[in-house]
Image 1: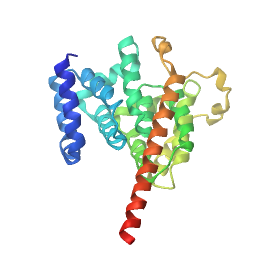
Image 2: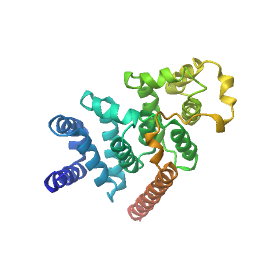
Image 3: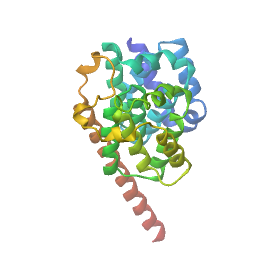
Length: 259
């Protein structure tokens, strides 16, 4: 990636940051067209790298959510999805780690990235951390959307892997974790009905030390998942501090208005 390309990506993200309406209405179309005209991997790698240093945490979370939706649903990203789904090459592992570090700005999108890349053990570990996060209505809405997405064609392979409980126990546990997060809603019923189709649920009680992690191949062994989990916690702590600061500023503003 040359310097002109990197500068273009920086300016594009600055434009999206200053004009949120543009991001909402035309952002996905612009990014999809760029992926068609240029290299999709470079587009996502560059944007993820830039967002990693983004100071506006709210924009970073919104932008990551937009990129994740494009990655999971757009036909233009079919080859990139396949590359990430297997993680068979050092390049795909490097891309996953790069995306992961920026995707940490949005907890639910981080889990969806782990589902896409078949990192079911790590997805389960992330969901275990959700109990320590600031669970808001927006957060639960995103979990709801992820459940709806699991029913889409893009995750057909994931639903089929639910048939082999012994090989993919952490996938089942991660989905049950999402179920426990959801309130009693249509998404709760949808995921609950899906999990009722899992054969031999008693196999979930097997010794987790004997279970596979839900990864295929051996080329991913160089990924440091402990470090990635620590990075996730660090980024989410920043978001929590930022929300508290915004809440404090809003409270001070309300007091001035009253006075």
